[in-house]
Amino acid sequence: MSVLQQADRFAAFRHAAYAKFFMARFLAAFAIQIVSVSVGWQMYEVTGNALYLGLIGLVQFLPALLLVLVTGTVADHFNRRVIVAICLGVSAVCVGLLLVLTINNAFAPIPVLLIMTIFGIERAFMGPAVSSLAPNLVPEKDLANSFAWNASSWQTASILGPVAGGLLYGVGASVAYGVALVFMAAGTLFILLVPKPAKRTNNEPKTLTYLLAGFKFIRHEKVVLGAISLDLFAVLLGGAVALMPIYASDILTMGPLGLGILRSAPGVGAILMATFLATFPIRHRAGLLMFLGVAIFGIATVIFGVSKVWWISAIALAVMGAGDMISVYVRETLLALWTPDAVRGRVNAVNSVFVGASNELGEFRAGTMAHLIGPVAAVVVGGVGTLAVSVIWALAFPKLRTIDTLENPDLK
Image (tube, rainbow, N blue to C red; front, side, top):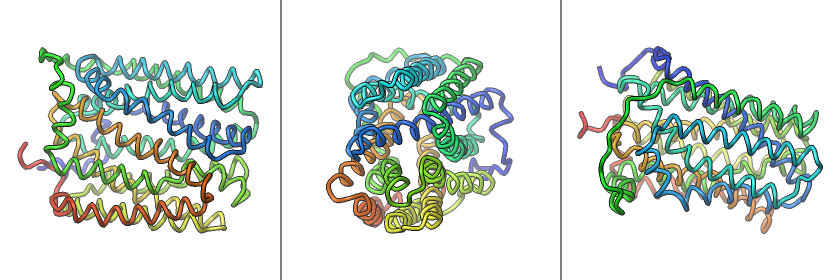
């Protein structure tokens, strides 16, 4: 039976180590969502300037780009579980600093951007480590199932976290940061409960060739290159998360709770799609389905951009999340099944830069464009750009377009 024919919906949870890992990711992701909603709303409330919303994304992306040769090497050389635990501990400290600033009425752009930069450094190290740790916790036959549930963990937090963040922020910003701090600390505890994975021996000299191995692998594997670069440019252009405080405040007039609803809507669509994929994994036409998901994401982005009715906007965002989940599922499964474990950390470090560019740099793109041409035009132009990317990449990467299953035939 092939990897993708595994029908046990809860196969990954048969492994205790993965179950603890899942809880750690969920709790941390929940905390991150609360912080994201709170910081975005509070920053716009304090400054009234969309540019600062973009800068929040930029300062979180730059560390992943600047440290890409270091973070992947660290994930391949040191204990990945310990790296993740340290990173979550640093995140807890950052949330605590935001709480202190808020309590002391000292919330201001410069100190907050500095704290978010530390967040970015922590995430630069955690991304490759956490992505590389997951395949060490389940056997290969359960990998695809674990990736669907990994996505579900993040998306469930993306549904509940923003709503909780909006409600908590309505009570008080300090309450929101306090709850986020508790969840982040709990996530750190759960990752420490994960049994230590088998020790990998890697005596390869840490030369420049070693450091660049992740780039070399991705450049050689055109299917992997096409998948992660497609996601990069699609979300970079189509991302509208940074502008949701503006939509909730000025366009749809929904308030903090409304912002939570908008931030949750993509997660609703994504979790439904992830649950479907966990039960009915993609077995054929994987490449075409990936491009279809990106196209759906772009169309839904345009609809969200022009909508002035909150429930239409929410539905469009849910469809965006579902389309994006198809792309994420295909990309993450390809990365795991096509990447040897010896270079997994370095490959995931490069992938983290791509993902960070699509998310955080995409937020900077959206915030800057909104500052120049207005939020509606910024979102619509981005959605149209995403549609264009799906067509261009389908022509530029024919092997990805025509791939049938997600398994690597050279590794069978």
